[in-house]
Image 1: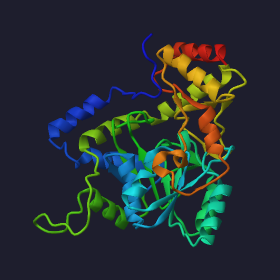
Image 2: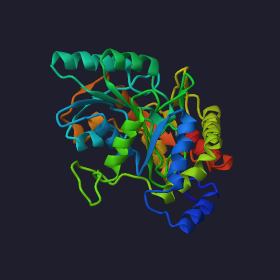
Image 3: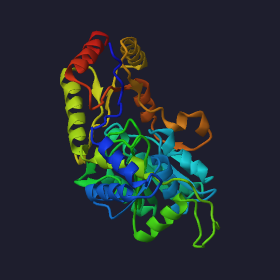
Image 4: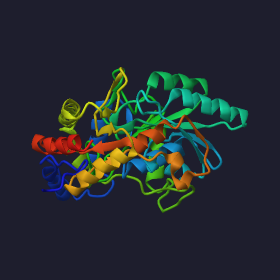
Length: 368
């Protein structure tokens, strides 16, 4: 059987037309009309006034930290149940991540653990400057509770919405609650530019600063002069053209993701637990994520699927368990550890067909 991937890129057929336009124009560098158009499309979709296209979600987060003036020795709170790219840019700044657990209600950051972390930090004379909050697997965190804590402790909120384009909380798009937000367009995301990201910023001055840093921090001079550290973080016009093509189909892809989730939910064994969603969250169901009874059952299912050429993946290994962060502070009740032990992401690509879904479901039901 042809391999069924977890979340492969889904090209729309429109990309080639736009690539031809880019090549004909000669504007293939990180400058051109498609970059402007892609930024405008994302801005209009999520209701943001200021966006900046980058070459990855990771670089967008790094720029956000730079614009937020996160420096060496600063402390930054981070969702532990996330990909390592949610924390690596903090290390780029020689700042110090502090990890916060998830809750069972959403699998996203636990507001109770978040406030406990802040209280404990204050007792230790540690004063975190920012919070990098992940909206996990395309679903919103409890933004009502989080925003109260952010305001109470005067934190700079940076939303990691890498997986969550099109997701809303109480009808407001994620990525627009914090001072900064960002999305990823990596090959496995709901829309893709093969590699790329988008930074959401609070005003034009911050956008100018981010653009300055993203284009090697070149001073205003006729020659190449540099007074600050800069980066090569801008998206190319070629990849932006791909993004413009992909955006035409974003809503259809979200609808397909939801149909896939619903089909799994209706047909898998009732002993299997699906990722819950809070009442005010309207997610994009980027990946269908489930929990089995224990680690052994999860591994059995993963291996059975793999033997049949079907890709699946354990849920994120919590960052506080990663060797890279073994000495960092962590606050929580080990909820994310339990989710990691029992959880699996199932194939959720928007090109998957119902025959393939039925095969996956049958294999899972037969073995759990």
